[in-house]
Image 1 (tube, rainbow, N blue to C red):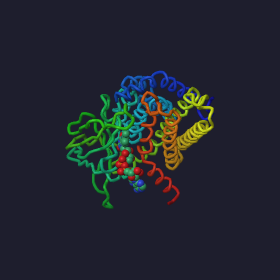
Image 2 (image 1 turned 60 degrees about the horizontal axis):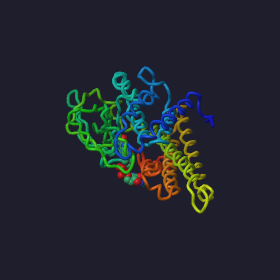
Image 3 (image 1 turned 180 degrees about the vertical axis):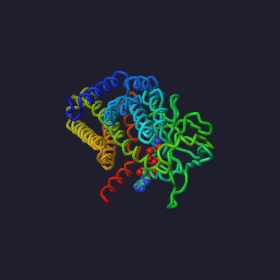
Image 4 (image 1 turned 45 degrees about the vertical axis):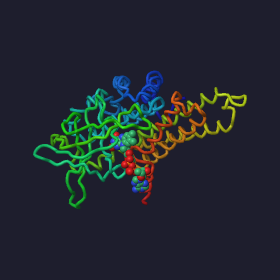
Length: 383
Ligand SMILES: Cc1cc2nc3c(=O)[nH]c(=O)nc-3n(C[C@H](O)[C@H](O)[C@H](O)COP(=O)(O)OP(=O)(O)OC[C@H]3O[C@@H](n4cnc5c(N)ncnc54)[C@H](O)[C@@H]3O)c2cc1C
């Protein structure tokens, strides 16, 4: 059924990515999940398809598309494998986008063509062991010594930070004090392999097994002064803007997972027999699936709306928070219900719903917890 909200180009992109997800990503998902291996070959193919360059202008190696197109691609990939979808989301939305939005012309030309081709990945280092929701509590410091920043501190849970193709991480660090005596936070690009920058061993996670996540430490790590990204002291504000956009993309990822749970449940309910009939014949099962479909539909509408506002240059912070809050909770609920519909088989890793269940919970946590989304919505209402 055509979606009247998409342009012909967006509909074509969605169809191409959906085919790729079905034919290439889905068959490999269980293997990467079980072996906890990063899907290099799939990422290479996604790079060739232009997915990592979707929202960037052609002069920087991009496709000249828009952020909404990126979200459509993320949704389709998440129907097959959330790890692959988050690798794209973090690579483009968090890795490359800060350089495009806030970088100098030289920084854009140095980094974007490689990042937009998918041959290299960028990471975004905001969270610290002691500062997540309260990201303004950054402890990492960067001190200007001649023409170099000397960075000390650590970051936690950083996606895409330790793959063989990771080229950089952009971090927040305290670079001084404001006139009001508050920490001055700036963002600095740290290329992979810089002495003093250590990518610690990967976390053992509940889900997103094929996504790359590490703690990072900085021990007298020196980078050139010109690696400052954006204005000095604007780092926190700039990262917040990136997170507002990122929430729309995480909503899209959540919708993809929620939709996958509907698809798997419809197929399973039609073939699983109990008490002499397919379980799909029972209204209790039908109602569960109907509610799952309704949740998915409303979540999709919410992220389409937030993306449309963003692209029209309208304020979209509240709408992005609403979409993230609703879509991530829809994904978690759908994953739980899909597992229930699958009975004991739903607890077996050979069924995709078991992976969706494990992959869903982080959606209520990453890029702002559900509580943080409620804080943003309440603030927008003047509370
Ligand atoms: C797999 C994974 C990938 C990630 N990738 C990245 C990445 O690439 N880059 C990056 O920078 N970060 C990344 N993160 C970090 C993620 O964004 C944080 O985990 C998240 O923002 C929550 O921070 P926290 O874990 O410190 O929890 P905390 O902030 O300690 O929160 C703990 C609990 O307290 C609640 N809480 C906190 N403050 C309040 C309040 N004022 N009112 C009510 N409740 C409150 C929270 O909602 C939560 O339920 C990743 C995390 C994971 C698990």
